[in-house]
Length: 171
Picture (cartoon, rainbow, N blue to C red):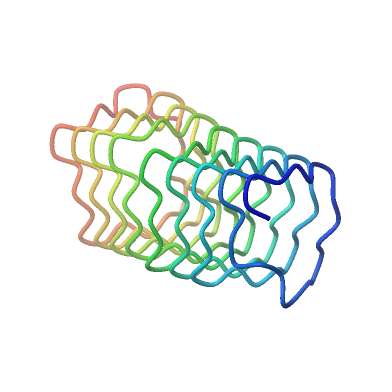
């Protein structure tokens, strides 16, 4: 699917799918429960797509667009997300341990009930981000901006908030 245009396509539960969506346009597509382990997804457009329950372990998401995508329940462990776009995405109940979101603009993202142990949000824009009941142990939030974000009932053991702007954090 390299550089393919497959917007609004239905790949739900597919297996044996190409491990490369490099620079492909699959916006608005249904990719729920797809196995993209170690896949090359760099530069692809997944905006508005449904990737609920997808396996993205060790996938390369460099510069990919996941704005407004449903990523609930995904497994993204050991993956590369440098310069990816996630504004408005849903990562609810996702497994994102150790992922580096440093410096990213994550406006409106929902990480409700997600597992983010050891993830880094250093210098990230977390405007209106929902971390309700998320597991955030050992996360790095240094210098992050939390305007309108919520951390209700989140597990924050050993999280680092030095120099973070918490002034407009929602209660």
